[in-house]
Picture 1: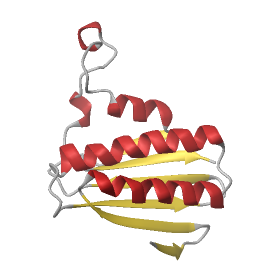
Picture 2: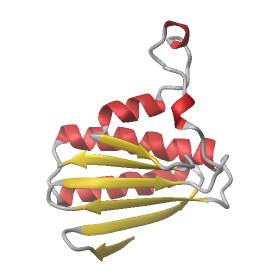
Picture 3: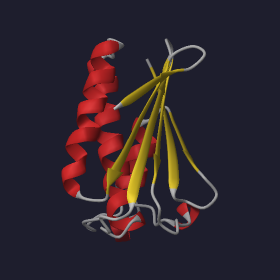
Picture 4: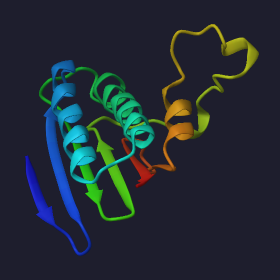
Length: 140
């Protein structure tokens, strides 16, 4: 793992192949940052949930489980917040047209809740225009 100093904190970067086994490296990074910055248990749990969801979406929906394609994760950390960025090499998607998982006709669906959950748990959730990158902000 590389850590580079930025003006007010640190930048962590991972480039992982699009396989489920890569999730362990991401979880290790989340734990390392949580320990280093004394992140509260609630924020840690929210980060772990959101990043698991974003990473799995990037692998499955973005990179279509193509192990040759990478998922790039950046964590920019300072004394007040962490900004996580998860980018895949897929074509992206229109995040504005996702069905509402809380609508009565969608309540029994087994999928389709990930983006909704991430938007609830992160302090801020921003997709790029293409839809292949999500930025997740957490106050610490």
